[in-house]
Image (cartoon, rainbow, N blue to C red; front, side, top):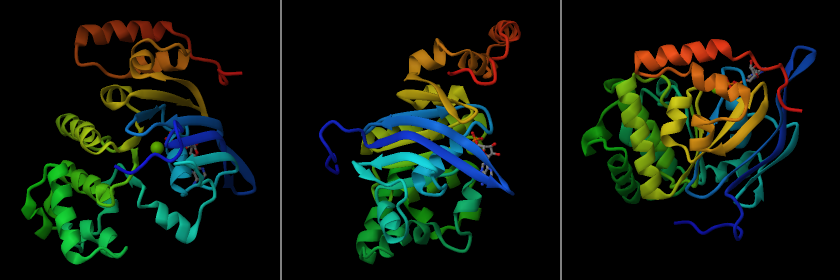
Length: 284
Ligand SMILES: Nc1ncnc2c1ncn2[C@@H]1O[C@H](COP(=O)(O)OP(=O)(O)O)[C@@H](O)[C@H]1O
Ligand SMILES: [Mg+2]
């Protein structure tokens, strides 16, 4: 385990972050002053409808979206505007898993090459890299002979396991997971969520877990933040936010998330229709 940065300080601190995107001559404020924290070994979910700013927050943390104002601290270090070599060094501690493993895995490389590359590129010997790759395949429950195969030979769920293994090879402290199970069918989704939970238990890694699906977030996260039109409207323990939310927008999100039981589904649909849409800017 890597040591804590400062006594009691969270691993990630997002403080009043604003992100403006340029759209032609005007700008669009995608994040309007968002704050959140993630502790070591914690999974914090970010839910909200499409366009609410979830991915933008993930990108701001990863340095992929320019922060207009506010501060992002990782292990006590201000990383808000970190660039170049300093940003690349941070990749040892801060990794990402995206929704689409097709786009993020090089089809011309074997899985062994894909997983070893981040290690050998930063000075690890080939023998040590091979040992770490074997360990990571074990973490994601893929057989050892996976190393000789190509991404195209795998199903969506297996490919996402490879993407998770690649995020893990440098033993990061935080992984930003942006809709990592959204492209998978329900059975595969459940298996990959269980895998994320097991990995967290085995490694102590933290997750910022982005999903439009409250049901997914309920299964994996310790705490949940709810995004609405670029603002974080509610944050709290999983049980509170996903079962008994305070904010009208979260209540609508909860009632809109599908449930398996058709009777309960019909009940929820009725209450959903009874709830009026929240005002455009629900938080003062
Ligand atoms: N690169 C960009 N340039 C301009 N607008 C963007 C860009 N990326 C995202 N947006 C806009 O910012 C808002 C938030 O997007 P995003 O963070 O992707 O939302 P989510 O992940 O919650 O669906 C959306 O209105 C989206 O259209
Ligand atoms: Mg998104």
